[in-house]
Image 1 (cartoon, rainbow, N blue to C red):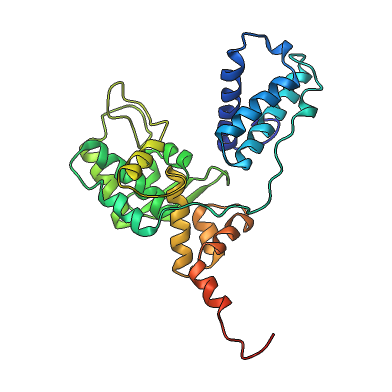
Image 2 (cartoon, one colour):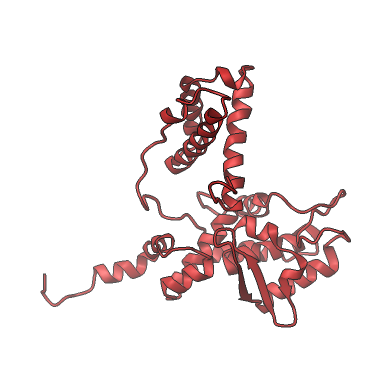
Length: 284
């Protein structure tokens, strides 16, 4: 995927996750891959679709399976015709608004982490990176100690989709949260990754979903999604509400094109209502 198709690390990790889901399911059938047929793929996608309400997710799963079985067929691991018969559901551009908690709820979430508990100290620094900079989970996991330039007050982020490092001004709030975590909580370790587990054996964090999801549920924050991406969407919505141009918002979020940012223009419903109610003086 990386060498031949040019996928980014984020896309490779995502595709591997999709394939893991499929093979865990197929493994329960106790049959070799060579015996796999399109009926098996259809059965899996039907079950996956029943558990996953988003058609886009099912389409992404189908795309990952199609790419894998095209490769597997070329290597003689299965019938080459299988890939041609894998189709996902039809989707439409911008059919769903990005789901995000309100900015007030984001502030409540951050305030709930202002305790002396080591986990809260670490997780508040992580949540601030999501909310202030709109970082992706893979970008936060990849942060290393040397990515904080304390002399110039910069945060250097290796963007998952741009294949480049992007500098951000390190805000006082985020900087203080990271300093407190490093000084008081972070275990001594040879790992250079910034965020580590707090229970031996110490190692880099690999899952960040629970950093936000459990706390949002406990606080009664109602949002369709409660993972790190919800805070990324909340960051974008807050920037839209403050009147920042979409180009600047896209740069802040690390979007490769303006198309990915345009959907956030639909979030500012109060402003859109003002436009809709504007009196044009009888013009039609």
